[in-house]
Image (cartoon, rainbow, N blue to C red; front, side, top):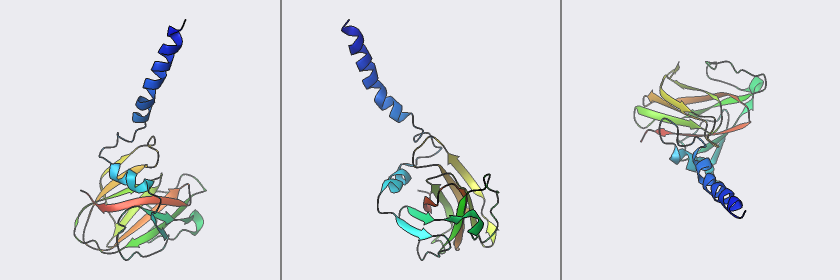
Length: 168
């Protein structure tokens, strides 16, 4: 009789780490460990939708968004939000130091448009998962050394955290 509870307890103890490893965070197309760590810090920089930043964020940046009907955009979002209640907005980033592949990672589900030189920048890769707490998707774009407008739409919450920088 004593065996059964001990076996059950052993199986329960062994299932803990396996369950944590199955959360999807290690299953993105590329590692997002650095971004996950940046999103987890308490002292993230913040910006309001519509702001022009003087420097690229060194770590995670929390953007305070506007209700969808009030959100201002440089160009209309390429994809229409699927719900009536959403948040969005844009931030302007300074000219990039050099051309190359840049990565934008988002903490939550959102549509992202990157505008450079009056045109939508095209993605050269993306990865996303809905089963990784705190990280939703990451997009890579081939950008030149000019200013960038980052637009976010279809966000359920009124804030979203992002990281932005060259691919390393």
